[in-house]
Amino acid sequence: MIQENQKSIQKVINLVRTPEFQIKALIGAAIVLRVVWIAYTNFTYEDAFITFRYSRQLAEGNGFVYNIGERVYGTTTPLFTILTSIWLLITRSDVVLGGRILNLAATLGAFILLAKTLRNAGSSHVQSFLAIFLLSFTSKLWIIDTGGMETSLVIFFMAASWYTYVKGEIRWTGILLGFLLLTRPDTFLWPVSLGIIELFSKPKNAFRMALAAGLTYLPWAIFATLYFGSPIPHTVIAKWVAYVELDQNPYSYKLAIITGWLGPLDIPGEFYKVKIWLERIVMGFGAIQIIYIFKNKKLAVLPLFGILELIRIVFTRTTFFHRYFIPLFWVGMILFGLGLGYIWNFVRISPRFKKLLGAAILLAGVYVSFDWGFQKALAVKDLQIYRQEASLQAIGLWLNANTPPDSRVQLEPLGYVGYYSDRTMLDEVGLVTPRMVEYKQAGILDLHEYLRAFDPDYYVIHCDDSAYMRARVIDPVNLLVTNYDLRVTFNPLNFNAGEEAYSGGLPRLSCYEIWGKIDRES
Image (cartoon, rainbow, N blue to C red; front, side, top):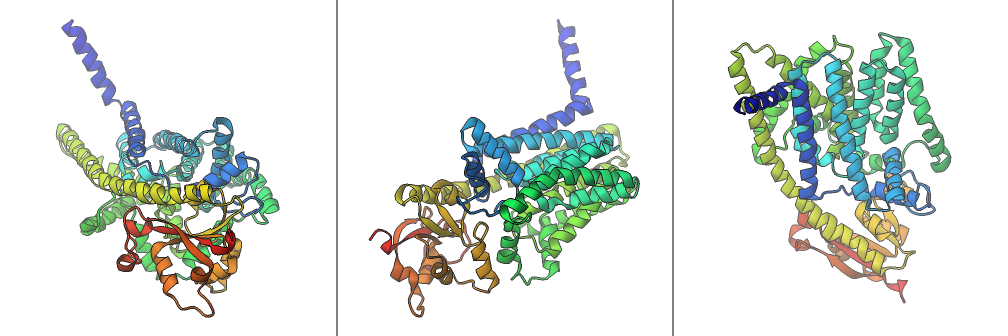
């Protein structure tokens, strides 16, 4: 009996020691961590609900629109929109649940394909393990992989196309690259990078890959041109005008923002020096690996894409949302892991001590990631409770219950409010309101002028913006004061507009007022 137990224990030990089991266990832990993140924070991005409203309109037969009857290409992710609309058609259940299931399925698939790709590309077990370890335990990806956005699907198609490329399946690589562009067209540098690498070795394959990608994407490009008037998402233009056009910060500042975010840990502000050193370490180990990788065609896409993507983000000044860094971050963490593994393989100490040292380093990394990740989870949970639900979602539900169905609502936070109100939205960024973009391009940036131009039935506004507008002396009249009255205030954290105006903190971000047009009901 004792011998049988010892044999069973030894079998388990032998299994745990196998590279396959270790990678599978790591991937399993990565998915569990993301499920725990969902259970604790319940967080869903504000912008996810813009896509969800498109999905619902499509599922309900109203067309690929945000506001019924207005054909505006206001989502940059047609494939994710279609997938979530199919979820709604089949299940008739919560779209957030469908988005999260797609997120987790895509994340699991990306991890599995990454592990297979690294093995087929000739990386050592230590290198593969460290790359997957970094991607598993960084809290920067926990929120991305569960927040209802399309980003996890982007990573899946990057991983899938890389896997088929390494396997030599060029046609499938092209098809998957087409799906990547359908998920988010601003990832075009990944197909470009694969095409460049193949062009220098087998030009015919590069052409076949480009043809397959183009044919996969072409039906949508034709549809978008005919339906919306352009294959270019209107959101690209709107965000450029709203966030980039007036941005005069130097490119070096943009580069610092990106490189300062590429470390694996969510480091609190008081540990700024740690952040700087970690950034340097990541870049250093990545650089070491880049020198080696360019000799390996199967891995060369990583540094090439990383360099091109970094240049693109800097020179287009696309630094206003960190989630735009994720494809670059994904590649950066793989390079960092491969670089660490490359150096580790050259460490010459006793095998027993090397294993103990490696285990200690990994446990320390897990502890720090959990510690700082938990601090981020607390902040994200508060954001979800107070801003997303107690304010934005509550505003949408109030509008749905207390306003006529044909009401036109002007506002800036388009996601939750637009989805739950089911009213016509006039958004001040211009994502689904092209006329708003025209005003910005003409240099009109005053909220009062937008009120004059669009004459909405209801106006959702930050509490401090409202206080500022009410106090202004405007010739000939202050439209907010004369044409509207305050209907309701949502202020879950007791924000004081007089003392904390434009503070940028959660109390300010959670405080909104709804103003209604006086003659609407007279």
